[in-house]
Length: 231
Image (cartoon, rainbow, N blue to C red; front, side, top):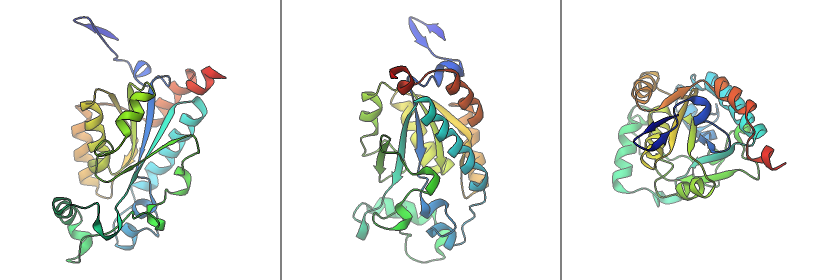
């Protein structure tokens, strides 16, 4: 850590991801996005990057659970009959999914009550883990995520999930704007578009701390988290 005009700033990864003040945010690991029988796969969208990132994020989640690190699952949600979609949001989705739609109507996915809204098996939340439904790319927009993080004394968010250039980057930016330290678990994020993933990683590398999932796990295992301190 360093002192900048009387303000103590955390600078070392060990300080940043201390489980006593860190939350792992797992973003949108839902069936419609990442499973072979989900909507995106049935449209022919390339999910090959997730084959590498999924097990690494699952291992990071497992380490968070073992070390008492706070876990928050973000769950992308779209209400039936497009009740959560403004005209501007529909236009955004039209552009974002242009190739996959093949001139068909805007895609409809992650609707509550459908299998696609559910989390993939290895990312199913435990009873004591926080789940935040979100209706926009950022986990902070129109949700209670900020309140939950502040209520639990969180200073740093470790971010993993999908997609890199969309909900991951949007949530990471808003976390920083809300005065949280941000660490991107760089091998635990992925996209269905490699070029956009790499462009986003280039941007985030110059704005946030990046670390491999196993490096974060090593630090968590060496430091007691909330549940371990209380036991």
